[in-house]
Amino acid sequence: MKSLKSRLTQWFNHWLDKRQPKARAVTLTQKIIYILPSRFGLWYILLLVLLYLLGTNYQNNLILLMSYMLVSVLLLALTLAWRNLHNITVSCAPVLSAYATETLMVPVTLHATTPRQQLQCYFKQHQQTFVADNSQQVMVPLVTEHRGYFPLPRLSVISYYPFGLFNCKSMLNLDYHYWVFPKPLATEAINSLGENSGNKNQLADDYDTIRSYQAGDSLKLMLWKRLARDPATPVVKHAPTSPQPEPDWINIPAVSGAALEVALSKACYLMLQLEQRSKPYGLRINNKSISPSCGQQHLERCLREMALC
Image (cartoon, rainbow, N blue to C red):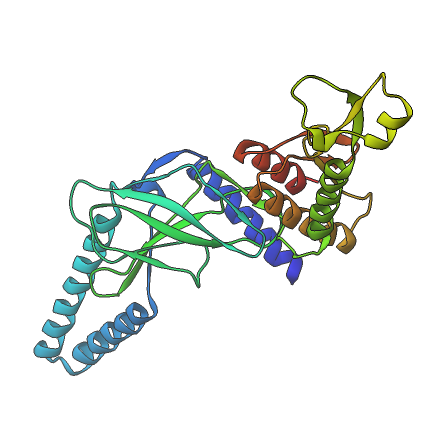
């Protein structure tokens, strides 16, 4: 039963791809608009059939007239439902990125020359956005589950206008992708990194050397005990300049499964913390190294490398 359902789903998706290939912007035409009766519409049609049978059986012209009027309303609703979706141009702005299990807000633009009513856009049935203007950009939610680089799922544009009798729908295949980065997992390793760097700087500050005395040097720096032993060559204390902080390296161990996901999540958290502190950092992953740096572009490069790990 499950294999039959998957085959039907695969066949249906292939049929949709033939009718509407991937595109950056799609104009809704008769070819890709699908109209089916809603649940309320099915009850309405059942009522029409019963009224017609009742009118013909008892030869009651008033009941027949009522059934004909209801049929005309049904046909009018069908036409208006189709016109409400026809010639709407749907496009999408460049999709941003999100972290795993977060909700990515996808900017979708609906443009029409005439006002449209009661439109809904969603990637999944339980997440909906209502639109009523003829030209408007809406943020359609998309829940991310796993890290990686994925194509956008089919965007459903649906309307029950005007009376809720028909489900007028179009399932669009927009040619866009989005990034899902590992979910940051708080770790205390960043504190140890910061402490180690601080200790290195402190040691550098405390470490003193000596050099020959030069005119203008403060007498407080003079080594008087050594001057007593060797009066001909006086020396003074000299503190070298503090070295620049060494870049931190984030290493991803060669593991798999749940251990890899935990390692990537912790590495993502460390990376964000180092970026917030404007400290240079590098990444070693899958025998590949990214040179230490900092900045938004460097962060994006490292996060994408981890998303594809």
